[in-house]
Image: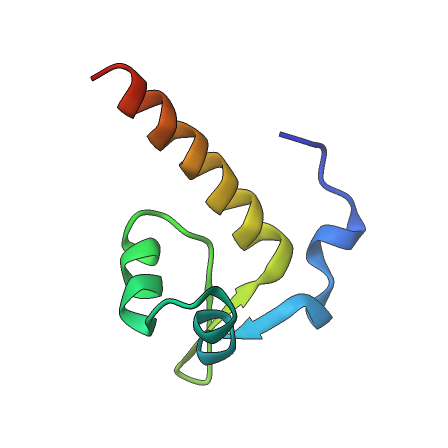
Amino acid sequence: MKERTEEHYKINQLIKEETLAKSLGVSKQTLYQFRKKGCPWFSIGGKAYYHQTLFMEWLLVNQERKAETDQNL
């Protein structure tokens, strides 16, 4: 994984759960399942937020792991 820079942690990259679900074309329940699998997220005021860069990195790493697991079956 790339070395993280200040850009990784900019607050303007926080996305509301509803916004992320809509942009990915998935349900909020799917995002909840991702959180159970270790997806990085934040709770602010009782609402779930995702950091755009950290979420996409997590998603890509987990897709690669799934592909490797599928190849080994």
